[in-house]
Image 1 (tube, rainbow, N blue to C red):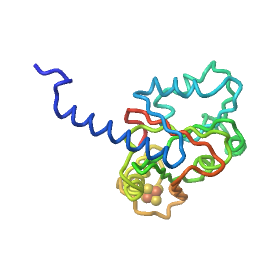
Image 2: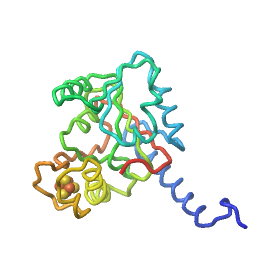
Image 3: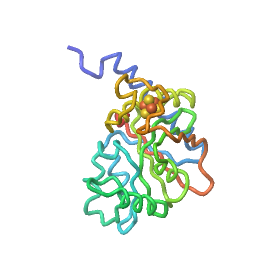
Length: 221
Ligand code: SF4
């Protein structure tokens, strides 16, 4: 019986993935971002904790990826001041207050909707707090992303978000929007629409330091 190492399909897939990650990482660095690859969720949490000193203020942007890698367990006992506007039971006013504080935090952690092999990021938001803090405010921005979010170029990034990530996120959030019935975006006018702001970060913003942490797993949408 052939072992996994001898599986030519698996090997070809791994070859493609390794090359794609390397192309993307180099392109991100050419565009002024820091870029790091780690193989799995556990190493991602370790890399994040190694970067953040105790006593730092750490803001959170809405991110399923951070939940999936168990970041919130990992950060416990690390001695940071965590600003998480998404904790259960918070009032809308309390959430707004915490969200505003995030713009002056030491570290801001979030994910992204798409990363291109040309080294750029594409994101769509409902309120815009996540995308705004991604390009200005926090002293250091750490974008954690599964490799499933890598696409060829900005055109593919837009397609990925509008055809896949946005309808799936609307479903996750149980929004009353057409896409949660059909699975397809119809550019709706629903009051519960989650796609109001789209941002292309094409190079490192002048006064922000952004690190992209690529994780060799399928994370988020
Ligand atoms: S614009 Fe509306 S239909 Fe399209 S993905 Fe967003 S919420 Fe769904």
